[in-house]
Image 1 (cartoon, helix red, strand yellow):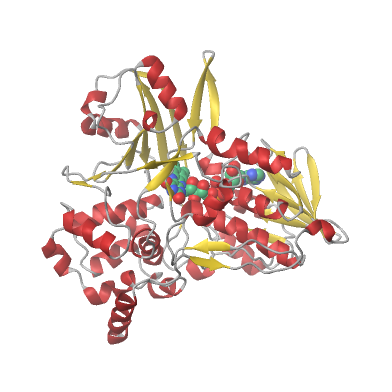
Image 2 (cartoon, rainbow, N blue to C red; image 1 turned 90 degrees about the vertical axis):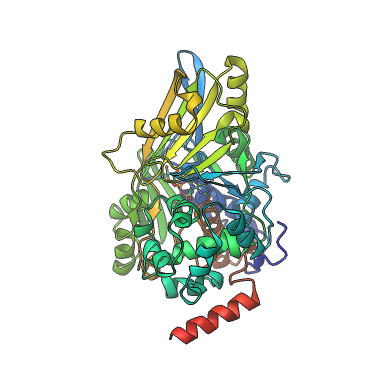
Length: 505
Ligand SMILES: Cc1cc2nc3c(=O)[nH]c(=O)nc-3n(C[C@H](O)[C@H](O)[C@H](O)COP(=O)(O)OP(=O)(O)OC[C@H]3O[C@@H](n4cnc5c(N)ncnc54)[C@H](O)[C@@H]3O)c2cc1C
């Protein structure tokens, strides 16, 4: 945390510990992804009796990791490459519970972006403070020319420079990211790179993504924070580096874990919740539903007691982004030594990025050392079902020609669709952490929280907020949270933008 303008969101004060209440509250957290683990941590640290119930046999959800066995040898696998940005304050607070220096993470000092014409942008050595980071990026970028910059419609683009959350959603949520970018004359080539990377990080085509969400991303990563654009990655498979240590920490605080246990439904009986699984029912004073969109919709559909009609309709209307493919290849020869740990790609459909795992991950580095090979991961987002995952390998061969002759020693292909889709016009009707029912809260990256957070950090933040809301209900102190500033940090840009917006009105 180096940004002195980061914002603290102070928690409600109360009792130090729930064990001093006449009855120690019991909470069931459904879902063991980041959101569920943050909620479980927030509750357990205040003395609440917590049980985490997770459908999969591993923790971490979409950031999960596990080890397969193949012919007697271990094959470590993750749900896919993840970038841990420095402005992920609440996620880092969670991970620091088990590793205060965050040695489990290692910095990726550069991640080039390459477009269909071979132009390469880089984030190496950019100033960290806005707006200089954006200016220097644009000035030295081969995809952004000065004449392009001059053509950007300053008036229409004003909201980008002066993002305030949640106000930006009221300004821009009604249009899609593509239309917005066209309307401000954002250069076509730069759109592919700088913005498609953001919008496709949401697993959506720019036509399917709310411009409010895109502008919020731009604020979090570019103009609203001075933490910089450099990110860290986990230095070992996710189970080893992140979740096994956190599980041990939570077990030490009495948290129970039921893995490989899907929750079927939740009912209310005599003012208590009953959380039903195949293995029986768990009673609880409170329930955190920290599920992905599909999981939440399924549990809700089978739990007619919960919430009210309006809220249930909000959840039914949530949407999931198109499927994406994570393709991990163990190759019999190394990629060239100058290949970056992570490369973002545009104009190479369906491929969105390539990571070279032995550059940062212990298990892959060990395998590469032993065999002389390389472990490469390809991500393809917003895939249509007709595109075979092999199409990404063809792009790998074009971008890294040395891989074309390589033999694939092992491979794993994951095709999933469990990311939320934020289509235009949906912000105000998205469900929030609070629900119409006392003792029931939601968490997850698809849940609305009126703070500048996205993706993993939204998952972590909603998890902490869910814990805080339950703790407040019991009169127990919550946990302070941090975010990047909730409004554009430059007074000059803000006032210019306001003038532009007023001029337009
Ligand atoms: C390939 C990929 C790359 C990504 N890269 C990045 C990145 O670089 N940076 C970034 O910030 N974000 C990234 N993300 C997004 C990030 O993974 C998510 O925002 C975050 O993990 C969401 O966490 P969550 O806890 O909200 O949901 P999840 O992780 O989906 O957790 C929900 C949990 O609920 C469980 N569940 C579902 N149904 C049931 C049931 N009936 N009973 C019990 N449990 C159930 C699921 O198994 C899951 O474990 C990426 C996502 C993917 C898929």
